[in-house]
Image (tube, rainbow, N blue to C red; front, side, top):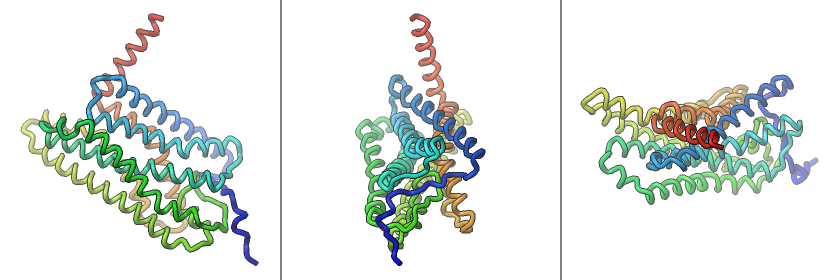
Length: 313
């Protein structure tokens, strides 16, 4: 007897755990990291907007990076928090595909932006006299536009094909709509889409990683040639925050490409996704703030001005 595929209009999200007690802990953890992520990244965006000392290309890219970090975590965490609090873990197919679109768009754009930020540090350290000329406003805006267009080009082909699939199952073993469990639910032939997803993912990873790697090879070579230890320390400090963020982002993604056993695959995928969509966006503002003197100084000065205005009122 054939099943009525068109009857499936909703998916059920299994989430991170089935244990009610553990689910409360998960809710508290995700809620705290989400609030920290939004407040931290909004603080960076605001500081760069209001402080005239933070109008260089580096801070323009950092501002856009903070916006993407808020977007990534907002596209999946609030939905799962609602599911835990309401007990309703269903999501419509349309909402599910919308979530996939935004998560992949923001994540792919994020990778391309990290590559652009690496190039920015390369120009700043290896070609300091030409930095202002090379990284002018028009170039910076075009590079950001290229990041968003690249993100769109990565998500649109596989998503466009996935929209025409028929589904035999409705269970998604994840805490948000992810491509892998959705394709497993399909009763259509998904081989070509799966290969396309892998090609898009690997292409994004390899292209951006090579750009980051080449930039930092030239940066390290230039820094080691500097005559004094003080100059070398100062040069390293200008890109140390970015290096930490790059290490977290690419380091976590490597686990996806290490082929685990079928039993561990889902757990590892969930753990990596939790790191990239919840933990990393909450840590990045602190990494950039604590390791950047100009951002710290801007924060203190802005805080003093707000305190002064409040006292005056």
